[in-house]
Image (cartoon, rainbow, N blue to C red; front, side, top):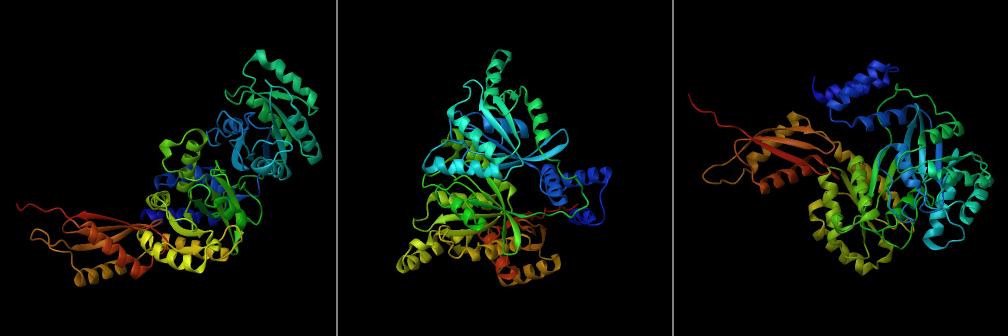
Length: 490
């Protein structure tokens, strides 16, 4: 049985009853052999198998160590951390486990009272995180003690009626435990002394959190593989990615501000569009050179690359009101090299007059010649113009990304192609394509067996004709050539 048939049969097994522990372990082993990431497979199975997880919102004023604590709880450096206030701005969700119980952890931006501009938007996101949570983890800097801002946040938490666990952070040793005791004055019960940086006291804190959270639904595996299709929103800073996510979500899901680089963490959002659920990921804007960025922006760039790796399709936003920048082409190249389906979205189209639109169309034909195969939509994230065209473009790209050409049909096409357009003669020799096969999908990968080396120009010609014949809209294509070895005469 082929690798793909093996994977398909294993995936199909989930449609017939519940797997026991041995069968599940065997599947995970096979999935790893087939190149699937075990954690992603496990997460997808779990997400498909039961209802929503209990939600814990992590709140506090700026720079008390919320994101450091989140990283400690989930066991990896995922949330962006930097030693200055205001690094986290959006609500960012992570899945966590403690003593066999699973829950969703929501990291929020620093809450402040009576603030304006972007700080007010950040505070609003934190308040929404409290409203939608089952319990709240309130983080206070024990070395500073309760501040006026902490007191104001306590009033907000009491009005919410949600169970609250008080975390006295930055208690790095016994000498500072007295600082934690000062937080009894907040009236929220026992403060749990913790060092998010070193992990001290985190176990007792999580035990208290488990008491505050409702039970998670039981974990089962008798379900089909799948889950929402994953869409990464990419683009340079301030191109409108967060505005687009808010537009498709129908709410102010992420912070939007004219300040470039507002988003730092990739923000996942499940959104109903076109009759199905999608997982949209708003990413940090990719700056000119990752190695020239520093601090939070550096880690944000790394997380953007990681979000792209986990996505299936990349929607690349380009500012229609500006000329195509080198950053834009680099982001497109990044998505193509990652092997993701691609949709190009020209944002802020509503700002252009008719004459400028005419000339921009000519510029696009010239500037985006390398990705002429990618579906393109002209939208306005601000007004919602033409947003209904986004889902069909994504579906087209995913369809091309998953297209498979039967071997017989492929070789019939290659035979006709070689007969009509043979490879140029080089050095008295004319290499020929002997036969080919599609080695995989997502993206489509072809292996051509030839009698000699095929020049890059001829490979591009073959790719162009493959697209004309079989579609492959919205997806990069990989073509590798294996040259037949000459056999020595005995």
